[in-house]
Structures are given as structure tokens and as C-alpha cells.
Image 1 (cartoon, protein in one colour):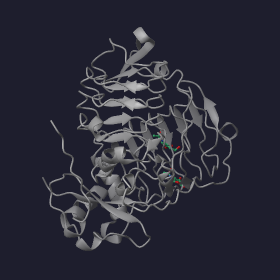
Image 2 (tube, rainbow, N blue to C red; image 1 turned 180 degrees about the horizontal axis):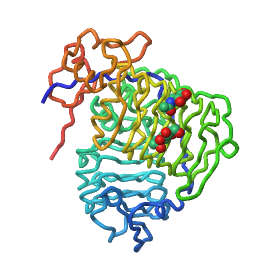
Image 3 (cartoon, rainbow, N blue to C red; image 1 turned 90 degrees about the horizontal axis):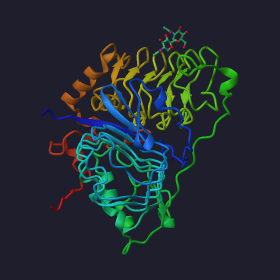
Image 4 (cartoon, rainbow, N blue to C red; image 1 turned 120 degrees about the horizontal axis):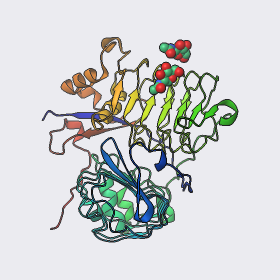
Length: 431
Ligand SMILES: *[C@@H]1O[C@H](CO)[C@@H](O)[C@H](O)[C@H]1NC(C)=O
Ligand SMILES: *[C@@H]1O[C@H](CO)[C@@H](O)[C@H](O)[C@H]1NC(C)=O
């Protein structure tokens, strides 16, 4: 395999702290709108097939445990907003083909070590908005393919017993595991991100602790106009919010929770702020084309779990901040044309993400500057970059104080010298 060393920009401080926001019960009727046949059976879960994958939707069912008899060929198991408290060993062992498991917004406070046994194909595990204080790395060992792990909004207890988990999350290759999860105690570590904290602080015997600064709250802005006044809602054939051509400067507030399509094209929205779309969590198509967009917050697409298509064409985007795309689990299509993409290291995050999401169709990714690469496909530029791997670009920090980290696709590859100082942790499995 060729060496692929990617420079990824970690915009320090740009990741908005995400607040606890259990979403109540707004998922009504989701299953009934799905394509394909919907089958009801014991436990009243809904079963349907989409893009060849079998979904089992058991959300909002007051379940306290996984019920036997659920189809074993389920690929996506949706268990959000139930009442599970403890995940026992082998709970999911018969779902051998499971790729995603959504357990968010339950009351889980304990996960037994073998709870995820047998889930060798699982790539996405959602545990946010629960009551977890402790979790050990052992719990994750049966999940060799895990790429996305959500742990935020759990009251993490940052003491010695969290050490193995935090080290695991901080392994440079585990980029999408546990982002935004924060310590709830002890007081001196309150608000620290597990992903970024100094691991030594967990076991502080010999250390003298100073209270660290708690991250700032989200940016406050002008109150955007209301969705119902500036947009039109159509219920058929699909719930659509049409806000096209309304001279909007911001995403309207109070988005209805049941819309499936939203058209914000031809407005003047220059930036997307954190969590602008959380209310519209059933959204499948979001059209933001022709808006002069030049800045998208890392958490802008937070909550858009079901978004399939995102049109960002004809804007002023130059790159994506690190993390922007991480909330879009089921995205299939990205329109990116007619943007002034700059082909320098900031663009690598986008390419890296696309490389790891091969089922996402995208279009229009062309360099507009620097002149040297103008007109090139961005992928071609990144290929050239990796082939040359210029050492002067592999420095620790860029001018504006942003931290550069390096992602490597394979653990064993040789790294250019400045990178070998990166801390690596060994995971030892005791059998
Ligand atoms: C988004 O809106 C533009 C302009 O209104 C339109 O041309 C385009 O087809 C829309 N994109 C999608 C994916 O519907
Ligand atoms: C691109 O956006 C600009 C305004 O931002 C608009 O005037 C122009 O018509 C758009 N082009 C297309 C092809 O939609």
C-alpha cells in the first residue's frame, strides 16, 4: 500500500460545545414515510429496507431490553428514546450483520463488558444522551470496524477508571470516536473533552491540579426570522419547506420538526452556525445552493442523521472545517460545484472524509486556486500532495494558531520525521 499521510486541520476551539438536548418525542411517523414495505410485528417495531439494508425502527417504545425475535439480518437497529438502563453481555450477539446501532436518549448507566459481542461489522454506535459515567476500552474490543462513536452528553466521571477509554479515544487514527464527550466531574476537570484532555489528569496522585478553563458557550447571533413567515410549507407529496429566493440572511428559526425536504437556495446566507438544523431531524434533502456561503460551523449539521442529499453548489466555500461532515451518517449525495475551493492542506479533510465514505456520490470538486492547481480536480491535487509529501508543510502549527494533526491510514507505515513525536498508545488484548 502506498503511504497516505494526510494533514488534517483541527480548528482549535471551533468545535462548539454541544449541550444536552434530549429531543423528546418528535420522531412520530418517521417509519411510515420510508420507502419500501413497512412491516409491523411483535413489539410494534417497524421493519423496512432501504438501499438494500434492513432497518429495524424500535424508537420511542419504552423498551427496557432487546426483545428476542427481532430479525437477525437487521443492518441498522434504531433504539433511540427508550428506557434501557443496563446493556447486558451478548445483548446484540445474534445481529451479526449490524452496521449501526442507535441507543441515544435512553437511560443507560451501565454497559457490561461483553455487551457488544458479535458486532464485528458495526461501524456506527450512538450512545449520546445517556447516563454513562464510566466505560472501559474492553467494551469496544468486539468492534473492530467501529468508525463513529457518539458519547457526548453523558456524565463522564473523569477518574482513573476512565483512563483506558480516554487513551483509546485519543489514538490519532480514532478520529470519530467520542468527539465532544466531556467530563462531568471532578470539578477541576468539568467540561474537559475526553478527546483532548491530558490523560495524566485522570490519575492525579502525584500531580498538582489547577482548575482548567471551561470552554466558551456557543456564538450568539442575531435572531433569525421565523420559518413560518418566510417560507412556505407543502405537505404533499413530501413535507417540504420552501424558502427559496426570500433574501434570507440566516437559516430561519423554529424549523418544523417533520419536514423531509428543505429548499433554502437563492438566499444570502453567508454562514451556517452550530446546530441550525437540529429541530428538523427528519430532513433528507437540504438545498443551500446559490447563497454566498463561506463559513460552515463544525456542528452546523448536527442532528441531521437522516440527511441523504446536500446541495452546496454555487457558494463561496473554500474548504470544510475539520469535523463538518461527521454528523451526516447516511448522506449519499453532495453537490459541491461552483465554489472557489482552495487546493491547500485545508481541503484534505474533505478528501479524507470522501475517501472513507465511498458510497457518497459527489460532484463539482475543482480547485479554483492557487493558480498552480486552478482547474484541477481536488482529488488529483491531493494525490500529488501525498506523492510529494513536502516536508515544509508538515510543521506543527499554522500561522493562525490552528493545530495540525496527521492522520495515517495504516498504523505500521513509515512516517516523515516531524510526526513520529506523535503519541501512540498500544492496545493490548488479553485473551
Ligand atoms: C437546489 O436549488 C437549485 C436552485 O433553486 C436547483 O437548481 C437545484 O436543482 C436544487 N438542488 C437539488 C438537489 O434539488
Ligand atoms: C449563483 O448564485 C448567484 C448569486 O449568489 C446567482 O446570481 C446566480 O444566478 C447563481 N447561478 C446559478 C447557476 O444558479
